[in-house]
Amino acid sequence: MDIIIILFLSLLVVALVRVLSLWFLSFAYRFRKQASTAAIERISVIVPAYNEEKSIASSIQSLLGQDYHNYEVVVVDDGSKDGTLEIAKGFEGPKVRVIHQENRGKAEALNTGLKAATGDIVLTVDADTRLNRGALGALAGRFASDPKLGALSGNVKVDAPRGMLQRLQEVEYTTGIGLTRKGQSMLATVMIVPGPIAAFRKEAVEKVSYFSPHTFAEDFDMTLAILKLRYKVEYEDRAIAYTIAPRGLEDLLKQRRRWYRGMIQVLAKHEGMFFRRRYGVAGMYGIPYMWYDTVSPMVNLFLALFAVMAGFETGNWAPVLFGLGAYWILQTLVAISAIAMDRERRLWQIFVSPFLIFYSTFLDGIRAAAFIEEILSLGMKWESPAR
Image 1 (cartoon, rainbow, N blue to C red):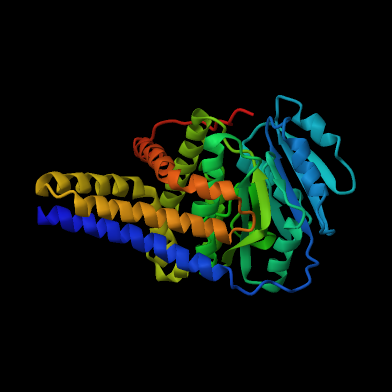
Image 2 (image 1 turned 135 degrees about the vertical axis):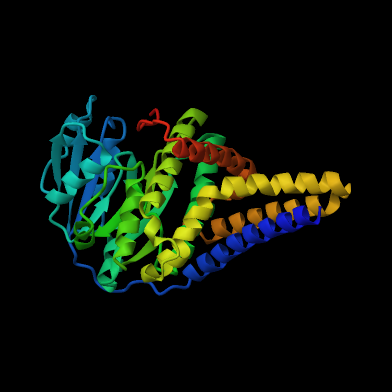
């Protein structure tokens, strides 16, 4: 029985250290020196679009409303079967170009736009995403101030969240995903520069031969390829992307299965980075962290299992409940502090944060199923959420 208690405590300590280390790093992010270099780099914004007639107009309008002047917008219609192409063409002009191609997938649409881009900095923006007015200026300033910066992640938010599920996703983006990227940014090793707002130095993208179409997570794949070249990859919370989040459980399930299976595919593809000093922090910390994130549902399952076994074996449930309760309280406090540090905090987010543990448990189930599906090489196609 002692071994079960030791395993339970060990897993609990690992989970606590992971949460606390990220919190301290993200807290330090608040005090980083802001880029002050005047930016003049030309930015090419690439918008891949497939059947996005309901959102493409607002996306392009947000790009045309930027307070940065040296940029272009390249919309790549990837064989849409609805009115996406016609709507996009209505915006063609000095700032906007529209390219049409037969359907070849998101990665190839991005590559088409990248090859047509004239800017030294390229920014990918999903067609269901709007940017805040200062996004391009914030990103350009960071690249101008650091020539070793290869990629930059923006700050992803849920666009006008409604209902409990979308509100939980919004809090997740702030307290989980955003917190992680802030912490990783302090190490110049953000592991995923997300598709809704992903900025790259064009020379870095060319060196890694553009996006690969062979995984479900082309953004993660590109980020690791750039980290391999020892470029810095950081986070900019002033560049905000408002993206449409799944409204129902079925759409959330489809999205997260694709995310999680894509993560496993990319980690397997770049297995040579694991604990390799030649790749710096990315190899010694970033890749192990992502592998832990991939198997964390199993860790959480074992944590709960060991807790129950320890309770039944000893008949003393107080230490077990205290340990799990302390972990839940700590997670909630970390979530609330992350909300407090966020640029767009809302009071309702604090009230939603205690429910994250139930939402996270649901996501753990999806992650575990995706892990098994990928190990068994079960087929899966790219599925878009309902609009």
